[in-house]
Amino acid sequence: MRKPTGPVALAVAGLLALSSLTACANDAAGPTADTGGGGGKGETVKIMVGGLDKVIYLPAMLTQRLGHFRAEGLNVQLLSEPAGVQAETALVSGQVQGAVGFYDHTLDLQVKGKSVESVVQFSHAPGEVEVVSDKAAGELTSPEDFKGRKLGVTGLGSSTDFLTKYLAVKNGVPISEFTPVAVGAGPTFIAALQKGAIDGGMTTDPTVATILAKKAGKILVDMRTPEGSQKALGGPYPSSSLYMQTDWVNGHKDTVQKLVNAFVKTLKWMSTHSADEIAAKMPADYSQGDKALYTQAVKSTLPMFTDDGVMPQGGPETVEKVLKAFNPNIKNADVDLDKTYTTEFVKAAG
Image (cartoon, rainbow, N blue to C red; front, side, top):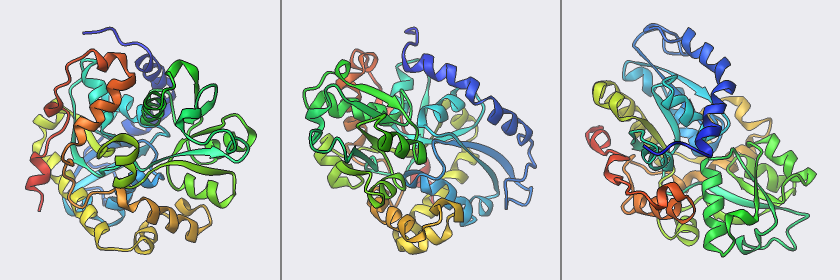
């Protein structure tokens, strides 16, 4: 096995930042832990989400709010970290049983000797947007202008980092010629953009909607729709998903099936309800005091979601192509895509 470097070392260091969450998770690890509406009954499953309030990961909280986990006899505890790479770290360290994050982490982990697979695919587009600050907008008009720029990502080694590097390389800018800056999402991303700590960056709704409303920046590349994904990346890009360690999946198939059943019910529900109806189901604080803006954020991002949880045709190949373009570990490795996801559970979901 190749010795982990770069993002992995950062991910290991990130475990320290997770220590307080670990304590919370351990406190709730018992079989009768209450997850807020679970009634203290059923099998407890802990899931780390790479930003619970991000619209790209909306199915996680929405499934809980709709009562679908409880209906399946599960007590699901949703934990949150600001970046997908930290959710990945929590999963591989055994702190949680599942992670809601980008599918691309399953490929990245495979070449590092970890067997992880997506069990339900929420999306067929990244849901990500590359924005540019108003100040830099005159000179930074496409990824071809990334050279010499400071570009915000949620975290180093995150999917926003992966996609930013791909857009750079695809447009002739070596990854050594721009600086990725970890600024998280939401207020920290917006503050970095406004203060000039970054010239632009990759983020999701509701951050995008807030940036546009504040006139703090403009959209450079929009990947919230399958069409936007095709244009920027050359194909469907399965992103947000529930992924789990393969050994755990194989040893807990009944539990995984219940989780997938719940998520597929939610995806189907989303496909038949409006952005207003979806936004109304979410926690009040997710709108940060502006319900209309939050609803618009949901509406803008809805096209990225699947309605059945199935991996999109050609999606894994697009992800592999993107990662191989800039990631030397994957570029020189044989990735077994069939082991990075399974459709066993979504096909059996009612």
